[in-house]
Image (tube, rainbow, N blue to C red; front, top):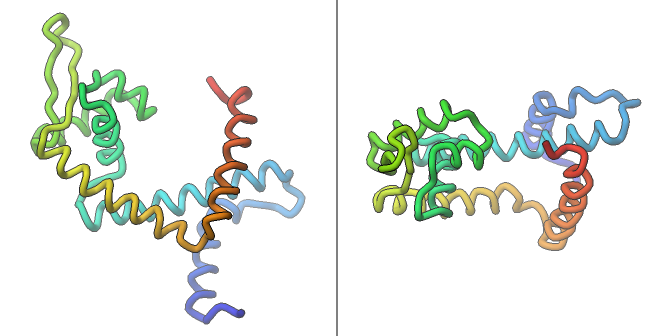
Length: 172
């Protein structure tokens, strides 16, 4: 079935700005795969960023920080957060400062070392995060909704093989 004019324009518009537009016909198949993965990841990430901004007036990094704290209710040191999120301590500090002002997290110095801070979700932060997480899950399901369950299972399995294959080479 041929796409409608609107669908065709949307598909063409998406292709103009994705990573795969860089491809040349003679590029190695590994380059094609890598750019396809980047394109898919970028499209989904942009969708999630837009949804978080529009519905919750927040950013993906703020959501990610709160997600780490939700998984670690005992709290995390700022350095641990930085490692888990794979961003600099300065980035974590800025995000944490905003969330403290909004009373969504607490940041407490360790009694044994005043230079080290432990960050935890507040009750309000946990409640807010659970609302965002529920919607985030719905958006991911929506974004991948064109795929059948068997395709999702197969892609997950194949990407697991890819992760294992590249881990030995790319893990630093």
